[in-house]
Length: 311
Image 1: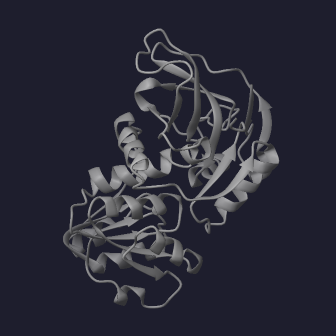
Image 2: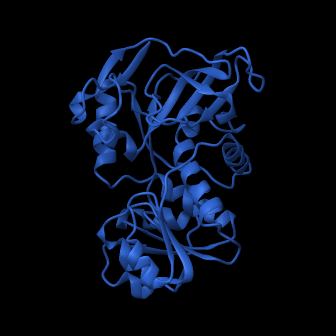
């Protein structure tokens, strides 16, 4: 089968169209005929060598959207022909490929109204936002949450999901993301390029940091005592956090079929939706272009790779 991957770490030119063997199925595994996947910042970091222990060829990708075409002997929840989406347990999840195998417990069916491109744009980004807001920050109705990077893939979901949890949301993003963040439901939007933005933010219960950067610590001062900062992009300074009287943690996601079902239900209720910026072809050139865009650090919403056209 075809896949786009690398045979050595390096720049975008290392991405090649490869011929690889189909994945083997365990007893609980489901084989997915892939229709689309999406690009996330972790993909280019993997390509550059962030995880040196990987065996080549390395196939990036962590979003699955497709149709069940095979299953292990103990699979009970899914049937051939089911339309499904998920994020794999391992990173990278090898989803830049025509077929992917995944444990059935991580899968859920597509929202009724969603196409494969919308489904592919959702799993890793939405799950990252939902898991952190709901289970780590534990956002409650009436909380004030600051989202840093509200225009990005995770941030656009975080705004919508925080509002679903009843929070007041302040979102920070680039000048080209202001209208998008407002459209998604943010109560207050701020341009990160403007000076003295901290003075314009009321004290918050929590900060969800999707960007990182050296300015992260400056946000400690606007977090209420016993509040928290959760970052998916940078390890916070623990001594500074303790001095400020807050909790600050760096997190990664734990793939969850249960939370994916909740995300599907929210999509079916039209409570959240992915924001797709561009769709790229499943070619070495197409994937390189997608990596170039995600590496720029100025991507609004999600970038999708169409592996197979939907009938």
